[in-house]
Length: 243
Image (cartoon, rainbow, N blue to C red; front, side, top):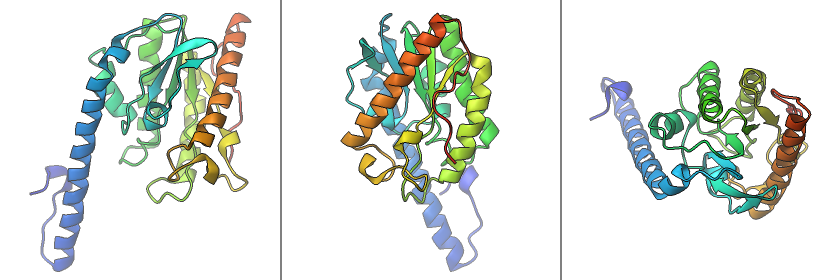
């Protein structure tokens, strides 16, 4: 039995084999959703527990897996959730207003899990923008840094070309949200792929990768605070998008 979204008429052996592939895909998505919900429950206190002078990380596994306690002299609230897309983050965390908005700075990193689904580029960008508006409505004075979607290395499920298109569209779109853009070109090799030494599987970051990622991000946050102090707001570009 397949869901209505994956259903097909089986008339040949090829149809049957395709049905098995679709069923596995359906089960995997169901398992992933359950894992995401469990992780949200595990982090409910962190999500709800606002700290005014803190940096709040909002995103997926590349943030969730990061063992980071302090940034820019402030404690870190790691509200990243493994496997989650921006659509699921909104539905499961923001719509029920689980995420507290009192941190002084927010780091939003989304997109890499969105592009594996059948969403259009416009839908993904709009979904991420709604996340930014959620934060802005609850904390008008917060620094919001949007981190570029990292390139991958050798991953068949994600395309760097698609990532580039998403980054370009997202960088342009956040100008209306009074957010700051932090590019991650320093994570790339000469071919525009995520450097092999910075990743353990072509997507998730290694210890060395997090060292570089943290340095670039912290520099971006500091520059955002300086720009805000100078009255310079709205999509301040730190690093150009590569590719």
